[in-house]
Amino acid sequence: MQISGAVALVTGANRGLGRHFARQLLERGAKVYATARRPELVDLPGAHVLRLDITDPASIAAAADAAPDVTLLVNNAGLDTVTNLVTGDLAEIRREIDTHFWGTLGMIRAFAPRLGGGAILNVLSAMSWFNHDGHTAYGAAKAAEWNLTNGVRLELAPHKTLVTALHLGAADTDMSRDYEGPKVDPALVVRSALDGLEQDRIEVVADEWSAHVKASLAGDPSAFYG
Image (cartoon, rainbow, N blue to C red; front, side):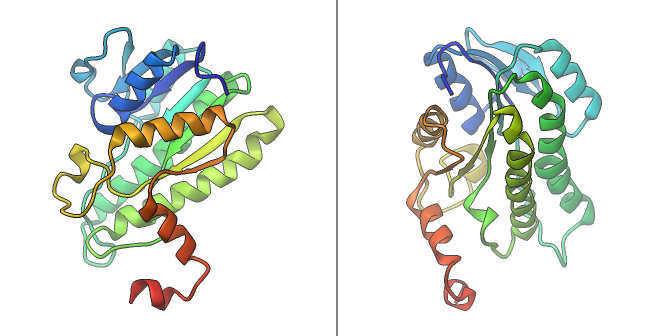
């Protein structure tokens, strides 16, 4: 995957990781569609700004029509409703699944036929592989998005489409503003992800915490959760 000369569409580009993705893609010589539910909040000179709500099929279709030349799709948009599965509001749990699973799938179904090979990068999480009380809806949604990523990779392989999963722990963004533990620099996460795309890697593990969680999967889960 060559970033220079690529045409990228980034979801959730108004802040956090999405803004870093759009900015670094521009710096590497890509044409960038920077999308957000509130496009007026996107402040990236040189980007083509589009309104996009990935939970709205009509909005996805409109974005696909407005950006027919995309060769790199960055599925970054996400949220954490801080909701538990047993006791939490079902509407909030559905919002997590609608965003991370159905929204990501809707974007892939709309854009995959237009990529001409190209690449898809799904921004996942270390929580694809574990869960945490207080955020169990988010963990379940990210686990679903991870295996969605594995599935579409298999389906799109005959079309020579690279499908890459990005896993990270807490990044220093608005989404993690209330988290008091260590946070990784979002600019470094995005740099690692884009380097991984250029190396045709199907998985990028961006920080030590994500690597630790992944390694724990080979052991007894009672050791990790204990």
